[in-house]
Length: 68
Image (tube, rainbow, N blue to C red; front, side, top):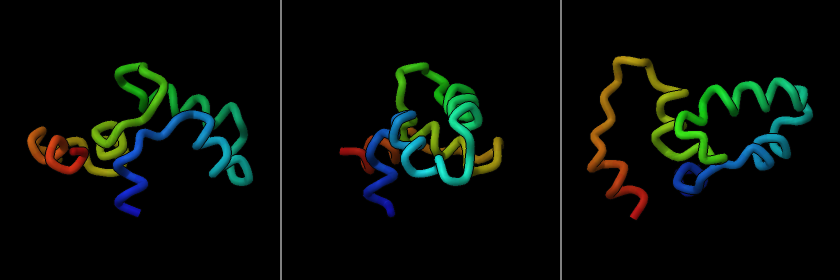
């Protein structure tokens, strides 16, 4: 699972994984909401922002170390 988190997740990947649970519109809406830098993928920081509380501090050096 950790390896999957290190790979940027595209809207198409989410659609493939969750289309049996959510409609295409629901997936697209959430993706647009969470893709903060609007680059078309959810990166590790954006993913962490989704699953952890807003006051959680993620050291940028840790992200760099993990994704290298």
